[in-house]
Length: 195
Image 1: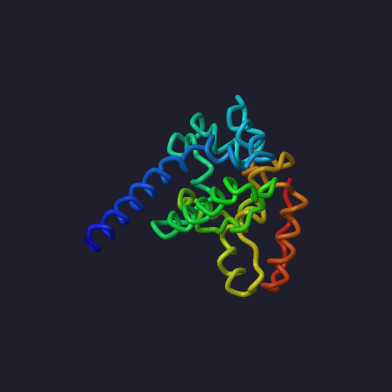
Image 2 (image 1 turned 90 degrees about the vertical axis):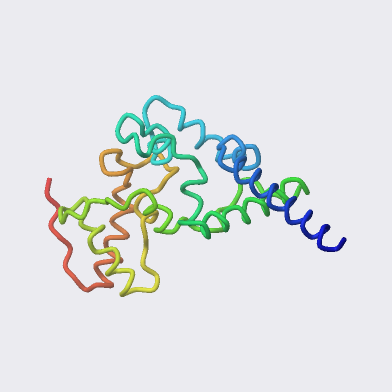
């Protein structure tokens, strides 16, 4: 009898996780609890032309069909089964807070977007040495040299409207701060800016 009860509980938990995983893949589910500003970010993905990196990913079909209709969970979960499981646990915690009425709005990002989240799709990031993309070539070296080194989202912000679409929605001022940090840590001269 005890084994049957345990088996029943395991089946229930397994089915619940499966259903939650399916529901969690829907952006509308995310925005039902994460209201503002997340609803605004989601609404931008429906725009005809991208205005930030999140809407670029949501409307990517015209430029890169492989990345078309990227969903919130794809950027907000790590790589592999463990990355997905971790996001499901955080999602379940958030759902419990929402049901209990203790969810804070706007929701705070408690698990920063790691480089691995980006590299799940962007393994073919350009490694040119021109000014606009040489940082990709030296990012790993900087991260090895400095414990507080930045990563993808320190230059490429997803939900801000002040970036340049032609270079992955980079904001020049924000990116130059990261350039300075990297060049100081690696003790190398900055390349000349060419127009």
